[in-house]
Each structure stands twice: as C-alpha cells, then as structure tokens.
Length: 326
View 1 (spheres, rainbow, N blue to C red):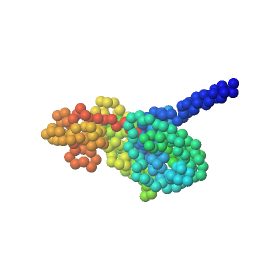
View 2: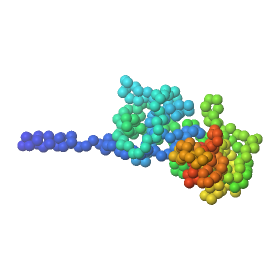
View 3: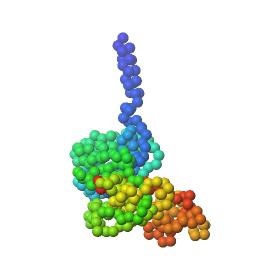
View 4: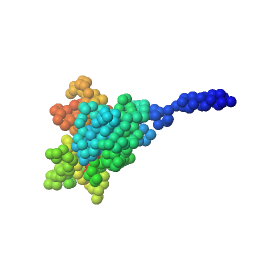
C-alpha cells in the first residue's frame, strides 16, 4: 500500500513540474505607440510600445529627454545588485544610442525579470523585453514612489504629456488647417523659444505688426474670448502664433485649394522648368509661387528658385499637433 501511495505522489509531483510557466512570463504582442509625446514645449516620437492598452518606454530614452528638466534622473548598472539603479535629480550620462527611430510593426514582448532600484529601494514595475531592450510602463515610472512626474493622455490629439513641473505652461492641441479669406494682422503675436539656459519661454511681440495675406495657411488651435488662436504655417522656426478673427478663416476644401502654401513630401517627384524629372521633393512646407500647365512651383524656406511638382501631388494636409501655451 505504501508503495502505491509513493508512486502516486511521484506521479503528481512530475505532473506539477510539467505545468507551463505562469502567465506573466508568457510572450505578448507589442504595437508601436502612435502617440506623440510632449515634454515642455518639445514634441518627441519615442521608440515605445503599447501592450494591453498601456504605453511602455525605455529608461534611457526618458532619462535623455528629461535630463535638462526638474525631473532628471540617472540610469546605471549596479553590479553588486545585478540590477538597474535610478537616482532622482541626477545628471544622466548619454550612451549615444538613445531615441532610436520609432519601431514599425508589431513585436513579440517577453516579461523582463531585471530588477530596478531607486537608490536603495527596489521598484515593483511591470517590464517587457523587446529585441534585447527593456521597456517599462510610463505611468509606473512617473509614480510618486518612482520618478515622480505626471502623465496625461489626450484623446483629441492622440498625445501624451509628461509634466516636468507642478504647473506646466504647455498643452497640445489637435491642429486644423485653414486659409485666410482676407488680408489681416496677427493680433498679440508670440513665439515659444528658449532662453540662454535652454529653458522654454514665451516671447511676446505686442508692438509687432505681423501681416498675413489672403489665402495664407494658418493652423487653428482653439477659440478664445471671441478670437481664434492660430499658428502661422509658413513662418520659419520658431513658429509665430497669435489671434485672428474667426470670420477671416475658412476651412473648406474649395478655399484651401487656393492656398499660398502647401505640404511637400519626399515621395513627390520634382521637375525642372522644361517638365523633365529632376528628383524628389524635400519634406516640409513651402510657398506656392506659380501654377502653370499642371505644375506647381513651390519654394521652401532657405530654398532658391523653388521646385516644380505635379498639380496632382499637391497636398494641404497641414493637420497636426500644436504645442502651445494653455
């Protein structure tokens, strides 16, 4: 009888040992995060992934971007702990491989077992390994017990904001392209630029007369006190912003087709004055100088005589995310 019991116990133990690893260690599908990320007045595209509805980022990418902000932190390998160690309010030393281009296509993500410490405190965070790199849930990293930065997701702009101060001056708006129906002046013009220490500032030009012409393109952000806040599409960086009367802006496709500016893509073919193919267009926004025989002459900022593109390639897809003051 004892022999039978022993055999049964051995069989049970063998069966238990053959049970697959716990679900948390199984591979999952990770999709590239489509959201843009706002930090201060800067927009970034991280090599980040969405897993089960949550966004996962690399530690070093975040440390690199936050290094000049009040939320800076260092990332080091602690050989004694065989773990990653983070320290708040510490300068990050770049390795040169941060902010790799955004991934394309879904990836297989495996749960990471690597430990992460904040100083001497071990952090309990979900992490996945994708192509040899660890990715951590952004909201876990921002938690007050971790790196202590606030995170907000904005549906209308499909954007993520990382707040590096208690009261961030900036937000993101779902831009919408419009054209001026009349010549006008931009009221209360201003730009978002940087001071000598590299910090974002709003520089106002209240005494500046900034003219916009009929059929110029502006990117609408929001209505405010009976005025439309806009960004001028064709101005060079830093982009000029200000206010216009709503009745002076048209959003109809018919009016936009008459615009003085257009969008160029490097997938467009260019032509010389005789109509012979001359290469590909640069990416960016250009001023339309001339329309002739099914071709459009477009001059980009810093360009000389401009480039000719086919009228069928003409694009006015100015819709974009606008980083602006709240």
